[in-house]
Image (cartoon, rainbow, N blue to C red):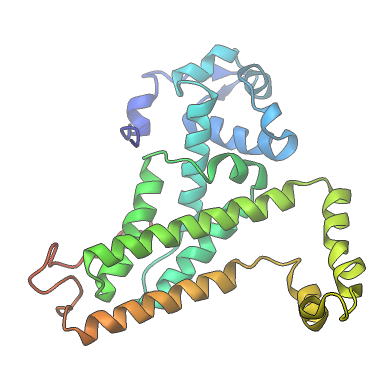
Length: 262
């Protein structure tokens, strides 16, 4: 079950602690954790190293977080917040959902080490909740019944985070390892003979052109196509009321996306 959301104001001490003239805060710890993950990976994110980086006693962390795992959940929530920052719905459900997916994917890839550790987690924090509300709002306002909105939401969120984790893992590899992996498509697959591997040989130039880039935009369009087909079927069956929701079904009112920008 998601943990209870605790507002940052309730997590702070009444008098914020200072370290080397710097006022400690939950946000400062999150930003420092992102930097340390980027530079050193998970092994660099320890209570002692965080304290050293901030010029603070290591135990200061526990004024804001239960431990490094709780800090990681906050880091994941920060990435969700960055994805939402500046986003506003346009009223075109497909454009809005596409934009949200690409923003989520990009926000995580900007911090590959953090993405690997947080993409599979559920924090129940404010930015994560705002992102979930935004996605569901787009789907329900488009006219999907609640059951279908939940189904598409599940696939949409898991797809975005799964590709974020996959692509982040590749970006987090040492440069030499990543370059070697990328070279395999040209050095091996492109040279397989049609006599033994006819299907690979036939598509090899296209594989070389595509396989070292993320498949997420393509997969996202496939998901949007599926959602559009579902929406068309629902409309054809007369299951939509103006503004979204279900006629006579559960949750007949539509959710609004206004204010979902986090």
